[in-house]
Image (spheres, rainbow, N blue to C red):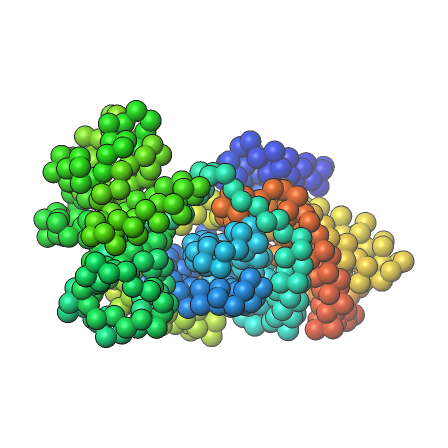
Length: 618
C-alpha cells in the first residue's frame, strides 16, 4: 500500500511539473506536504532535506558566484572572448563554448549562462551573426561543462548527497572527469558542426527579453589628460570591449580604426547595451558628455535613480531635441544615452555622425515616438514623470559598477572555499558559508546581491530529497528496479543501465534534472542489486544522464536564452535530439569502462540515523 502511495505522489509531481500552472516551488512543497500527510515519512524526515549539507552548500555556491560576477571576473573573461568574433561565426562559437564550459565546470551552469548572455549577444552583433546561431550553443556549453567536475551543476551535488543512502561513497571532485570531459568535447564539436545547419537564422521582432539588451548610442569625450592619450584606439575598442562607431577631433572626422593613436580631446560615438554605457560612465579617462553637467557629487547615491524611459505617442518631446526642450533644466534628469528601433538604428548612427562632424552633438537629435532614453537623476524628478505624458518610465536600472579591484580576491576566496570542502578541512556547507561571508566582509559583493539567489532551486532540491527518501524507505525504488532488471535477462546490465539513463532524460523534461535523478536513482540501484552487480555505474550513469536534457527548452540554462534568441520549441528538438542520442550512446559505452559491472557483495545495511547526518560531503 505504501509503495502505491509513493508512486501516486511521484505521478502527482510529474503532472504538476508538466502542466506548469502552479509555480515550481509550490509544486515542490505540495510533494513534501503529501509525503507528510500520508505518513509515508515523518515530519522530521519530510523536512530534513532543507537542512541537508548539500542544499546549504548549493545556496552558498550561488551566492559566491554573485561575488565573481559583481567583481567583474566573468565580464573580463567575456571581454577577451569577444575578440574571436572577428574570425567568423564558427570560430567564435567554438571559443565561446570552450570558455563557457570551463567556467561551468566549477560554477553553476545557470549562473554561467546568465553571466555570459550579454557578452554573447554583443559579440554576435559585432560579428553580424544572428543571435539564434549563438545563444543556444551558449546554453548547451554550460550544461556540458557541468558534467566535468562535481561542482559544475547542482545535479551532481544532489546526486552525490543521495549516494550514501544506498551504501555508496559520494562522488569525488574529479571522479566524473574521465567521462565528463570527453562528453563535453564531443558535445561542443557536435554543436559547432551541426549548429550552423540546424539552428535558424531568425531575427526577432522586439520581445520583452530584448528591452534589457538593446543597443544605445552615447557621446563620450577624452579629456586632454586622459589616461588613453597616446594609446591606440584598440585600448578602448578591444581592451575595454566598447564599440566606437565614430571619432571626431577639432570638427574633423577621423577613421575609427584600432591602430589610430589617440591624442586626447577626441569625441567618441559609442554604441553598446545598457551595461556598456553605464560602465563607460564609471571609467577614468572617458567622460559621457551629457553627464558632464551634473557631477556625482551633486547627488547622494540613495537619492539617485537610473531609469529607462520611452517616448510615448503624443508626447510633446516628439520632433524636438533634448537641447531644444532644455531637458536637463526642465526635468532635472541627465540623458546618458539614446536607443532607437533596430530598423532605424543604422540611420540614426549616420545622422549622428553627420551632426557631429558639423560640430553638433547627441542632444541635437530630434526625438521620435518609441525612442528609449537612459536617464539619471534625483528620485523625486523621476517620480514627476510617472504620469506617462512626456515620458513613460519602463523601470529602474539596478546597476552597481564592477568592483574590479576585488576580482583577484574574489577568485581566491571562491577557490579557497571549494578547496577547504574538497580536502575535508571542514564540512562542505561550512566551507561554502565561510567563503560567502568572507566575500561580503571584504566587499567583493554586497550582502543584498549575495542573497539574491533563486530560492526556487533550494526549495526544489530540498523537496526532491524527501521524495528520494520516500522512494527508498517505502521500497518503491526496489520494486520498480526489480521489474526493470528483467531486461537484464536479454541484454545484460548495459541494457538496464541504458533504460535507466533514458528514463532520467525523459523525466528531466517535465520535472527537473535534480528531481529526475533523485527519482530514478533508487530504481537504478534496485535494478543493479537484483542483477547482482555493483550499483555505482548505474548511479553514475543516472547522474550524468540527468545533465543531458538537450531536447526541450525547460532546463534553466535553455530558458535564459529562449526569449533573447527568439527560439521555438522545435529548435531545441532539432539540434538537441542528435546531440542527446550521441551522448547517450557514448555514456552507455564509457561509464562501464570507468566503473565496471563487478559482482556486488552482500547488500549493505542502511544506517538508521537521520538523512542530514547520513549525507557525507564529497
